[in-house]
Image (cartoon, one colour):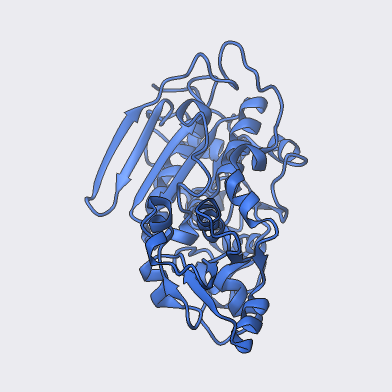
Length: 392
């Protein structure tokens, strides 16, 4: 389905711009008119991380005239395996500023607008309003639904991408011509059901594959060429090296873009998606200790049974001394219970506290009333007890 160009062309290209974009200009489908549209386009990248890195770099190289960057995080060493817009010297630097510097180095003719803020319901509409197109590089469900809803309410198209381990997905959502993200995923998955990249990992080069597809779709929308991924979900398996696409139809009963929408303004997305289940929240209330408190229990010789509920490969990276590995999945299946002593206090931990809270809920329901978990997990242990250990 071809669509009309999203952006009107700029008045002209300078001599320097003609030289820079000459390989675009000699493509008949792009030509001078298409490059002028790119020059006049205003594109916002939500996130300057795994997907945002290749997206920003290729949008800049393509000659998109105005690039906005929304990111409030700082560059961490663990980012560098995949977030190629940042370098070693950028560690500790604000991601938005680091990304902006790289964009300017790639193309000095691009105007860069930095939004060094967390995207919230208080600012998302104002930020999105200044752009023609949104490229979504977020990595959590709450922000994805917020990006979708804001784009739909403002009538703007946005290009979505998702990555996990060796798998990637991409689509274009534009309710004027097709479905929205809620038509594809009406409800978020149950808390803890789908691991994040921070928990499950991601092949670094997968970011480039999906990020470049997002840029390809942006160029098509801006210039009005080709058949964009509106109404189609592209699925990529990097291990099998296979691409396939699935039709996504507009849901007439969609609460946002359907015939009788019930969502007419932004909602509380953290509550809608939830970071951990209600059962886990209840279990953790009054049963959460700090990493420092765990260290004090060990130093006193308290009779505790410390359980690491992460996966084997995470345990091999770093572990808290004395911890026994029993993955969260064993708790959810019930097979972990037979391995736990009833005459010792059970202390659970994971990477950051979410998975151990879910496992704690299982224990509480099984009668381990005095079990606790470590808030902040092994990352808190490293930060407050033993900074010599590696993080991931």
